[in-house]
Length: 291
Ligand SMILES: [Fe+2]
Ligand SMILES: [Fe+2]
Image 1: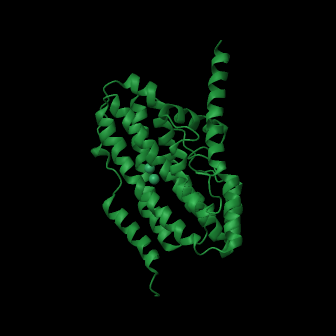
Image 2 (image 1 turned 135 degrees about the vertical axis):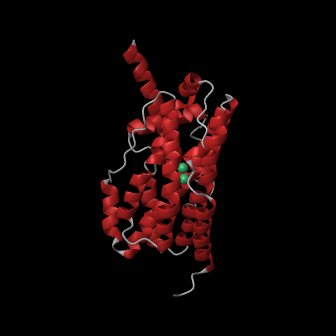
Image 3 (image 1 turned 90 degrees about the vertical axis):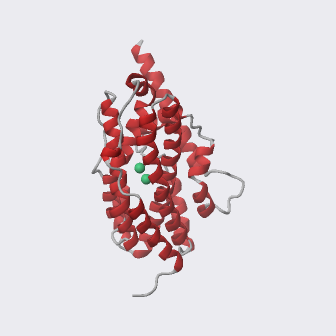
């Protein structure tokens, strides 16, 4: 076996370390005590629901991956099968349990539908050069997703702690939040490594497909975009805030280094703005329908 290059070895070590140091959160480590369930539900119920759904949909994400990347590198399989999926599914179960205890329904997670776009990428993926394009899109999406999760959990943690719901903040949100940066680091290392190997036409295609396909984490249709807009409003996230700059920082650096001046790719700002607009329009529609 040939010796992996130093940075590739770093990636393998990172995944091994994540697996060893971050086992899935045990259910019996969680304290579901809530002092004021009515207020917690009214304020953050929909945020818990959104995050629970996104986390539980990890099972569909794994199917998507297997469709999109028919021949993935070993370290990717090791990451998503042994580290990422077991951690994320547990995040989803715990958040979902919390929202049920607050009197809400379980999250409506889509666990198995694979879009046509991904099937096309998967078919093209049998040609190695195209699979590298899909892989790059997967890493870039992973970076934005995981960074979004950390930032959203930061805001949720502070909001819940401020309400005096210490058990939820300390034994649910904080331990979940702690596992997200390791996921982000995996995607970032992978993205940097692969980007340096891509040919100019592959980079062009990645930029093009990314611009066409970007959406905020977990927002796959207008309803879910409006849900994300609601989450932005509750957590105080703006379409031109630090939030978008942080989720797109490395993407900006890698994909759009030539476009100096813009802090955030225009498609990111646009997608966040659209989510807020859909959320506002839905709320206006709901209130006029109620009149
Ligand atoms: Fe998670
Ligand atoms: Fe994650």
